[in-house]
Image 1 (spheres, helix red, strand yellow):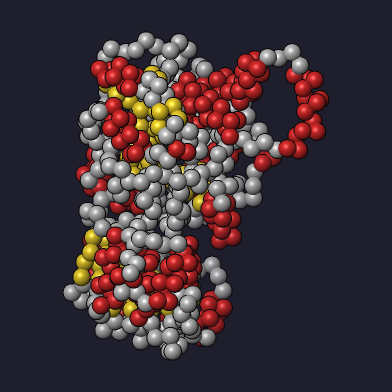
Image 2 (cartoon, rainbow, N blue to C red):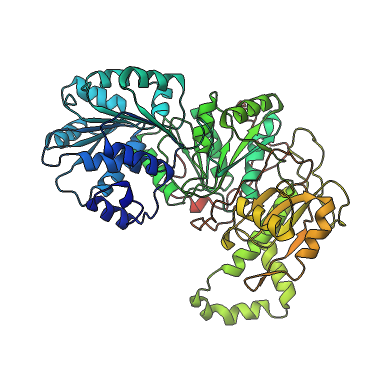
Amino acid sequence: MTKFEALGLQKSLLDAITDMGFETPSEVQEKAIPILLESETDLVALAQTGTGKTAAFGFPLIQKIDSNSRTTQGLILSPTRELCLQITKEMQAYSKYERNINVVAIYGGASITEQARQIKRGAQIIVATPGRMKDMISRRLVDISKIDYCVLDEADEMLNMGFMEDIKEILSGTPNDKSTWLFSATMPREVATIAKKFMHSPQEITVGAKNSGASTVQHEYYVVGGRDRYPALKRLADTNPDIFSVIFCRTKRDTQKVAEKLIEDGYNAGALHGDLSQNQRDLVMNSFRKKQIQMLVATDVAARGIDVDDITHVINYQLPDEIETYTHRSGRTGRAGKSGISMVIVTRSEQRKIRAIENKINQKFLVKKIPTGMEICEIQLYHLANKIKDTKINEDVDAYLPAINDVLEGIDREELIKKIVSVEFTRFFNYYNKSKDLNSSDNGRDRGEGRDRAEIPTSGAVRYFVNVGERDGYDWMSLKDFIRDTVGLGQEDVFKVDVKESFSFFNTEAEVTQKILDKFTDFKVDGRFVNVEVSKNPGGGGNRRRSGGGGGGFRGKRSGGRRDDDRGGRGRRDGGGESKGRRRDRSESSSPNSGKRRSNKRKGDFF
């Protein structure tokens, strides 16, 4: 008996589950499915985004539907068009072996006449956004007076978007004896009000602590001057060459502005906000899902319904007003068992907000420094070397090799390697060589720039380079465990772990440095040497926080799915909300390759 079969699901659903490749139910599925199948009950389920909630209510709903009746029996309300379509697609996949079960999506921005026609043909399950659903009810185009089940998905999101009155009006037109299933990441007062008014003695399940963040997400914050937000954003991107991220801004104006500047500076970026047409939004989201866009700049409202499992970073360009909103933002990464990082760029005056978020999500933030220019150069150099090493040879180049060999005649191997690497590396070096320290506590030159590799430090924190990374199956959690267990260190002795595609960095206190270097002398894992060195640019050091940092137990090694694409874009300074007149850069001056990628921009990148 499979684990899904043990939950009580029928064979047709189990066949669909097999086709989709699901093997083990998530925690919310294990808790919710048996309850919903065994009895007619109301349910409140609190679980983070990305924990498998759609299947948790979708499987029981399909199993309870009478496929012989064309009457609408189930209604699922979701906050956005994107999420509505996503749920509909998943429900259709779940019910592929069911006869005569139709799932219809109702949402704004599409023909209401066509949606009404689909419902008239028979729709046992309707997935709808509150606004369009209310409109169709008022026009008498849909009848939900006989439904047996009502699902409120992402309830806190819907209420946060101002749908309280719409939801009340919709639920008022449904039978009192229906079963209501409410799924939410957090339980603010408004959600509790809905539960009290429209639900009868609901059972409650919680995955993790109430209102807490996901344990697979590491939370970091960086303190900068107000005018340095945009240069700081670029440095964070350059420090993570394989970044696949969502960047959150407060306003539509800032979202568009940041996206345009990123594109101008050579990054594969796009904007997602409420001023875009539905067609523009679809183009952007399709490009993002295909990883043609690596940095999606979005408002909180527009980002509702983004369900992509491989997002590596969430970057809070500006903090939201509500702590619950931060929980939803950070929940976009660290999904499906993978680890992720949520970064926050703040000014000194905003640091108090970090403490409030920590108290709410029951997790500590790691305070980190914006990388120095030379740290970025080091990371990009290693990344470039690995990129060259792993490039698949195109045999069609053979025809050109004789002429190329003639051009390169007289250049020895070492000089040729230097020249090849310098083609890309020089851009970073020239750009960052004299760049300033963006960290607000020190406005002097970046520490460590232009220095030779330091002697082994005798005090303070030490930054190390190690030649393993994501490609070897590590994320920040599992690499920390590997270093700690291999050397025999304590839980807090390894911190500030930064994992890249094929190499990584980590910190310890200086007193264990010699022990680490001795342990990793001629050290092999599965026949491969694992080399650890003191980093040339120890800017990741400094005083560590004793609050857990990058800790956490092993959650499973990250699989691939990232884009191997060097990100060398540079650009002009942006102060977030500065006036258009403040366009001239005074610190990180114009990009050496700002026009390099213009011809490579894909449709949808410029919205």
